[in-house]
Structures are given as structure tokens and as C-alpha cells.
Length: 98
Image (cartoon, rainbow, N blue to C red):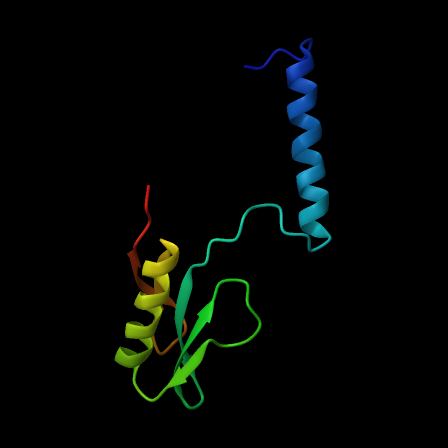
């Protein structure tokens, strides 16, 4: 258990509070992940970068969207998150460079 008498306790607490406030204001508090989501779209399937408002591309088939998402994720060393027709996450493929 942390000792509240130390300055590091109060510094860490203040950092956590500031992060929560910024996040609630809509400010990104962590670096972008560049994860790519393959999601259902009214015209078929789409690739959408995490946190992006616009689609990277729209495809007739999920396989085509998945292939594009894999290319992007490999370049960034990120993850492809695959959604099913119901919109729920069904699988993921990681290309992280840890």
C-alpha cells in the first residue's frame, strides 16, 4: 500500500486526476494506437482507424477490407480488430513490434 506521507504518492494521484479530467473533456491522454477496425457498412465492409471519424475504405467483401486493414496494421505495428455482421468484436490479429 502506498504511503500518503510521500511526495510520490501525491504526484501520482495528481497525475491520475488530471488524466481523468482531460479524458472527460475529450482530450487524448495516450498515444494513438493506429489499430484498424474491420466493420460492417451499408455498402459492405469498411476499414476504420481507431479514433477516426472517417472510413479508410469501403469494400464489397469482408476479406477485401481485412486485407487492407492488415496492410495498414503491419505498417504501424498495430492490431486489426475484426467485427462480425452484428458489430461485435469477433477476432483480432496483432502486428505489434514489441
